[in-house]
Image 1 (cartoon, rainbow, N blue to C red):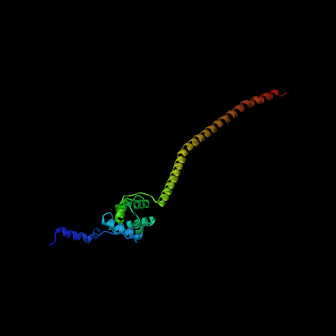
Image 2 (cartoon, rainbow, N blue to C red):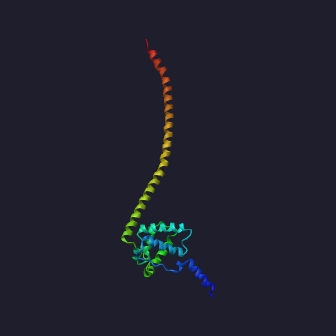
Length: 204
């Protein structure tokens, strides 16, 4: 007779065999094959649902796109001598997704044992430095554009206000001009009789 623990273990094995199998990384893997093996490990660890199927399919497709974009495959994995460069590479190709750390942790388990246990060195190679510099330059340009746009937005309101006040002054000036015109017209009316009177007085 088998004990209850043994029966449960057998059933668990039948439904979750990957938990009992260590997935060994192959240096010949393509990015898609690496992503597939990675998702197998995420499912085994309970970090990724296998059903409904589209959940895993969508996540795996996303990871394949990331790996292909950063050139991560079996050969690249085999070139790392510590987890640092691997983590930097993956983080550079992603946007801080919620599952990012789980992916990084699972990938580290694919590294050769000595590399996986080595002290993490977050050092950048020349290519990474150039890409980082380019990213920083783009960020600086973006910030400059935003700052310029902010200054324009801040400057529009006072100029608009002054323009409005200037328009008021022009309208006031126009009314003043009307008043001035009226004064001149009235003054002309006052002067006109005097002019005619003088000329009339001067006639023989």
